[in-house]
Each structure stands twice: as C-alpha cells, then as structure tokens.
Amino acid sequence: MLPRGIQFSRTRAPAVDAALRMRARARLAELVDLANKVLGTSMPMPTISFDLRGMTAGQAYLQKHHVRLNAVLLTENEAHYMSDTIVHELAHLAAHARYGARIQAHGTEWRRVMRALGAEPNRVHELDVRRAAVGEVVDFLCACTRAVTLYGRRAKLGRQGRLFCKRCRQTLVVATGRVGDKRPTPAPVPEPAPSPASVQYAQDLARKLGWALSPEVAASREKLTQFLNRAMAARMRMPLEPTERQLAYANALAARRGIPVPADVLASREAMSRWIGEQALVAAQRP
Image 1: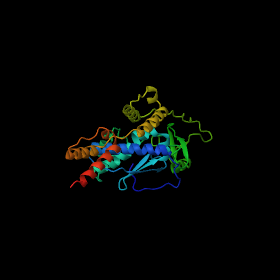
Image 2: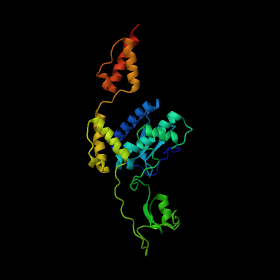
Image 3: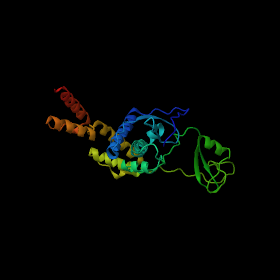
Image 4: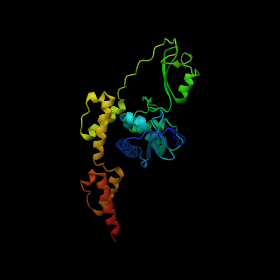
C-alpha cells in the first residue's frame, strides 16, 4: 500500500518482539540485495517501523524510503509477512527506484518487480484482522445470508442500519441477532492453509540451510510459522555471502595487485569487507 504521508493512529500499536523485528529487518535486507541484483539498481536499505494499526498489513513511503508494518498482523502471521507482505512493500520502493515516480502503485512495473522477487503480485491480503482492527468489530448478515465483518466506523454505521448489501440491496443486520431474527449466524471460519508463497519461501530457506520441509509442516500455518522462526534464526547466525559489488571490487583490487582473493574471504560478506578495506589501504599507501 502507498500512503500519502505517515499518519499515526490514536491507539498505540503493541510492541513487537525484538527477535521478530530483527528477522523482519533481515528479510528486508535480503530483498534489497536481490532487487539490486535482478533490477540493476543501487537502492539503499530502507528504514522500517512496526507501529501500523488497523486492517492494513503494511505501507511503503516512497519519498522517505520507509516501510511500515502492522504490529499485530506481523506477530500473528510471520510466515505470510516473510513471503508476501514485506516483498509487497519493498517492491513499491524497488519499482520507484527502477522505473521512476510516474508509475501506478500496483501497475505493470510493480507486478514485474514482485515476480522478479519471487512473489505473486497480490494487491490485498486475506489475513484475519479482528485483533488488529482499531475500534469495534461486528459480524453482519443480509437477506441473502452473506456474512460481512465490519470494523470501527463502518461497524457503527451498520449498527445504525445505514449500510446495505451490494448484492441484494437489503439493510445489513447484526449477525448475532435482533429479536426475531431467524437468519443463521455464520459458522466459524477454519484457519486457512499457508499461502503458496509462504511454502515456497520456507522451501527456499530450508534448501539454503540443508534442512527438509515436511508435508505436515507445509500444510499448517502454525507449524510453518514455527519452522520459519527456527530457520530465520539459524540463517541469521550464518555468515552472509558477499554482494556482487563486493566481488567485482575485490577482483579488481586483486588484479591490480597481482594477488588472488582468499577463499575464506569469498564465503563471508563481513570478511570480504575487511579484506577490501585492508587492500584499499595498502593501495593508497603505495607511492
């Protein structure tokens, strides 16, 4: 989602666990590196905050180069965020960096970037937002027995009888009933299975770690989230691979000095950064 400006809710968002914030930042950094590699951009790491409330999963601020995530929805749907929401918001920034400011928010360029980052270009999410909503949450029914869940101001309008079903054009009524209302209360909706993008992200992460993703875990949103928590923690303990720019610069330095790039340096971004700094210092000191 692309907002006009950062607007804070009157209700403060709950705190997000520090480890989860770290995993979200790591995922965002991973996507920035991927976007720069596949799009040929030089986009810096955006800032990120976890103070969004309401039904929106995330927001991207182009001018501020900032990503804002929903605290409640992130905590309850980590797997979906890692595979979809964070990709969605970063794709807005990447499309802006690659194609300029005149593109449509969810237009062809944004969809192209989403696919390049390995995700389906879905404009909206289907997460349960009841606990994230600001204000009252009410279920309504109409004459065609469609179940509709409304939040905050619209829930208040529905209670006042001022909203209508778009299909049957009848007034919405509270599902749990007015006196004499014989229409059925909608049955509880079962927890949905993990999205294909979440499963694909978990499989890719498992492959990098040399782990196996069982069909039982891939079929359960709760188990998949637990798996991703462990996998992301293990991934963060592993040294990051050098970026393409680091490799190109290191090879240029090595060729200039007539020395090879050490094998242990090629396996770690941090080690590569130290080696480049040392070689650049040596080159600067030579007459």
